[in-house]
Length: 360
Image 1 (cartoon, rainbow, N blue to C red):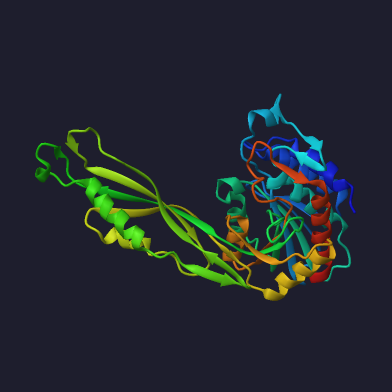
Image 2: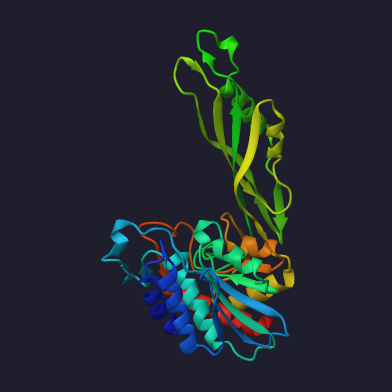
């Protein structure tokens, strides 16, 4: 057990990082320089990275992020996040998503030994803003052989167990814009109704079957849904413009053919956000992390899938064999009562260290 993990979690969680991750990054960098035997760097966007071991061997990265979503009013006071311990759990913004796992990874990086390859610690900025830090790191050459991303995987297969996620959905958000010609509503035939054109596009979207995928025994089912619509300027004017927002949950492989709506007259389609899904590309690596997870707990963890997009999607897209393993439980992240189990933080430390020593 590493009693440093809950203490380190409290210190890291108390540092605000919803508007500016700089102070949290400073803390992580300083702690690693003082406590860990490795090469610590800070890249141009604020990511903190540390390396140790043999760079000529396989590379395993322990990956997290130190930005958070804004705290609720009751989670902050005088410019600091409030941290409370009760019932064996730490309560505060960022405990679950995901500074607790970052602290566990920091301690595992420090303590892992007998490595035949290179162990990397990476804490990214901007995960909550679409993977800003992960994309910057990848564009600048961060492509380890393997990565364990410390997002939530606890209580997925059953209560009390920290599982290993081998796949997750992505998200593609897009906008359909229908254009027409305005006219007075008393003479609708003099114009082209953009709302009618948008409705044709919506009808087409409703016909699409969202793709599904199977990854190491886990089935992921995507979805496509119209979530917003807006158009028109007055009750007596035929509208010349109408927009429709589409939320698509993607899976590894094929996607819904949304580009087909652009073939309709007067209709355009544009992608606003595209967070990639994740599929573990190396079954042996997944089984190795699962073995480490079994060693660290009494329960029976499984290889599972997750509905939410994470930085693992960017890494997998770049060719990294990824899994997700972390302390957060479903429903904890981004809530007013966000919390994490201290026992599970300790468990994650053991999983990360054991996996590092097994795999590299």
